[in-house]
Length: 181
Image (cartoon, rainbow, N blue to C red; front, top):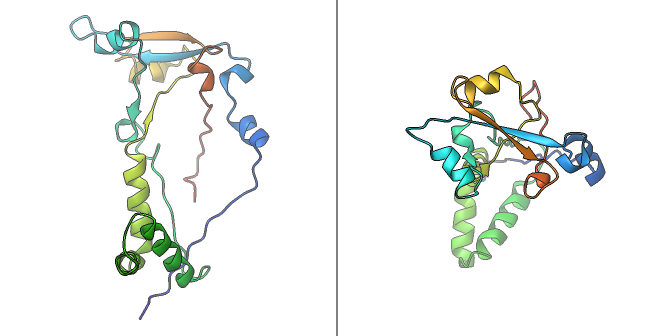
């Protein structure tokens, strides 16, 4: 017997213009500079050498962020809104596209349908754990940033021209007091 599960995706009609109002590129804002706080230690100059000698920006994995919720996707499958047969058919199509036989794809889909919440969250987590992020700020005097990212006020704050590539492609993020659904 197939246990009934459903998937609810909340999709809003957000235009690119609306998205950019909330997440503007630095080149579209009044901020001509972005700043990055870094530790600096003469005995271990790894971060500074990486930036100035190799001309590379260090990108952190989300698992290394201070906030355990940053970069962590979460999906919830509701029990009353979607047809499990539609989900199963979609999963079979995905796995057939990955060179599985129809029988193998149906078996994989059946196993995943036993606990779709776990499948979606595990898949998303595996994907996002490989994503790297380079963070900047517009506030070079932020005491918390000096404490956390500049090794207890002993590091450096480096200014970047926000109109130059690749910095000009950075997006501003919006924090929320509520964990998204």
